[in-house]
Image (cartoon, rainbow, N blue to C red):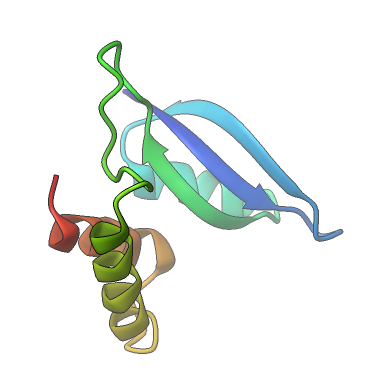
Length: 92
């Protein structure tokens, strides 16, 4: 099991953030969606060194992720998989 942080939107349109453990990001997303929540993000929790999959302060990485998501989502890829793929395109 790995630790993840997530952001979801409930049926009232309110955003919520939380932490959970799951086997994969996709498994956590399925669990959250089964509760009627719209998954916005699922990310690996920061480790002690503070490394993250995507550092939002880097404009080029954000631009690359946005472009990748713009191509993957209309193609029918599920949001969590598209986010994972897009973040892999942006690199560490």
